[in-house]
Image (cartoon, rainbow, N blue to C red; front, side):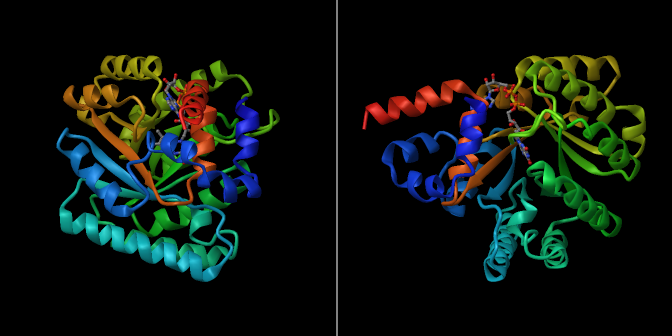
Length: 306
Ligand SMILES: Cc1cc2nc3c(=O)[nH]c(=O)nc-3n(C[C@H](O)[C@H](O)[C@H](O)COP(=O)(O)OP(=O)(O)OC[C@H]3O[C@@H](n4cnc5c(N)ncnc54)[C@H](O)[C@@H]3O)c2cc1C
């Protein structure tokens, strides 16, 4: 089912037609506070009152029109201004294919730089990681940006065999890294096909990210997972290494494991929630369905109650 849903996420026809259905829209609201940036900012405010920070992302990917990529960049510049004006503990995360990566690397890089320059020095402008054909170029552009700016971070995926090596290179430059399991459909030649192997690799990579060497390089390590068993192992291992709670950061998606988000923040860990918003939600929503079979049942319930 995971593979079918991920395949569906790439269907042009479904992207155009599925969002029209009420039962789809109703299910999506579980994972996003609304389509407008105002909805995301209001949710960020509420989370902030619980000691939880946020990362905002405007849904969209694989933009093939220059003007549209410029519009997206302008939108994010405005969001950065609004975050600053509202004094919110919020950051921004972007997909490079949203900033024109499919059109021209230099054009994409200049859009990225504009966003990094408006991000305050003490915060991070995050770069999402997309399907495997984009990994090399994303890390290349990331390294280039990191040479010039300290306040930029990148995501890496534990399901890819290559990530351990990528992580070593990122640690050596004192990168900011968000570790995820990985959300796309990748072939067995390059990614662990079994979930238990991905989980095991995640723990191994998390320990690398929290190692004395990483800490010496002042790596910002964000553990982006909702997996409570894994979180427990990371928490216990970190305590055994004498890592302070305030140096341990977890990130989760809006609407998933809310109680765990609050618990972590109350216990003194850094906790950030990624809030997605925008009207181009179909492929992103399909990836959320693929992550958990129960979400499909939830969607089916909304279909039959409509
Ligand atoms: C902050 C953040 C940023 C991310 N950025 C990227 C990125 O840039 N690139 C990328 O490839 N992936 C990204 N992801 C997605 C990630 O790769 C996984 O697909 C996703 O987080 C599910 O994996 P998991 O670690 O939560 O573990 P899983 O083992 O999949 O889930 C553990 C438990 O969490 C709960 N859960 C997980 N997903 C869902 C869901 N969709 N709905 C309801 N409950 C759920 C369930 O209880 C499940 O049993 C990001 C995830 C987060 C949290």
